[in-house]
Length: 452
Ligand code: TYD
Ligand code: MG
Image (cartoon, rainbow, N blue to C red; front, side, top):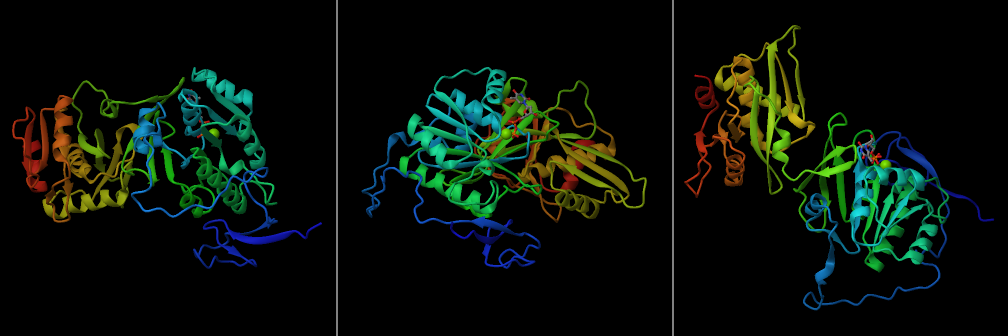
């Protein structure tokens, strides 16, 4: 019997070492190097029986033909948009997200609605558990086959048998290949099984959708190379206590990464949310102080988001600042701007900020709504519900223009808002909007406009 061969891998970055050491030389993390058993063999091909591989020929760019049918529509508009129009043939997609967020539900739902032959491979649940889930989401599709298997060689055997057009793998951390002795989920197994799947995907032009677990700090478990190897990395996120889920592309070789898909987790699976603005604004009857609505953009899609602030006198020495769905550092910066440039004494107050719906935004155009909400709570004076805001705040207290302001104005108009506050420096080419556009230059202006 061959001698067992072991090697040391950094669990953070995937670097390989001949011996153990305390700190990884490549990513400088401590205590991440773990010994793993590897046993390499010469012949490693996803298809052992026949060799279909032939050497590729170099072609000039105009000689390469582009198939019209290069993208496979998933019948799920939100996912299609995030991907940039559907699944690209032969591409490898990695879907990451916290446990219980709905990764398996999303991909099973897609597998069951796609008008293609899909092989759904699960290493986490049994066939009957998947059936139970499918019953819950009330989808019944005979062209979707369910396989419970964790060995890649067996998976490839099943693939040869059923010849699926799309493959879903739940999850990459449960797979193992015979060619390596390390346990499933270890760095070397993840790397090898992904490599085998990529080779298969590219050679047969079959899209492969992988589910990946994430670590406690939010990264996809396994080496960073996993993210380099695949074509698309999607992140499924959301607050577990809220029903809304957001699908974001962190990397996309075939489209933009600024698009966003919104879903709502219901008792019958995930519902696509086509008009997100309506759900992100909380329903209320009376005007309440401390709320302001921002006209933001995610990708090319406008989103009206409600910002809620609570300002109260600090009980303890150091005032508290807390932000949910918004960058705390940016909140502190905005408070400093208010303090310094506009003379609002917020230093002795607690400030809490919350973005409604449990979503996280990073569009800087939300800044103006944030300070308006803070001022409104501080003054205890409500901002009328039909006002909205779209501008960035600079360190000097200046109100800065944002991109594609007309798209935001149009969305606000469409949803029945009567007034939108934007920067004076934003150019508007079409003058005849029914919504009233208020142009402001400084933080003081906004105070004067709203509360005096
Ligand atoms: P799941 O897809 O198993 O999450 P992951 O694969 O990311 O770990 O999602 C599980 C959660 O989703 C669970 O808490 C129950 C909830 N859920 C619903 O609310 N409605 C449904 O129809 C389904 C199938 C799940
Ligand atoms: Mg799962």
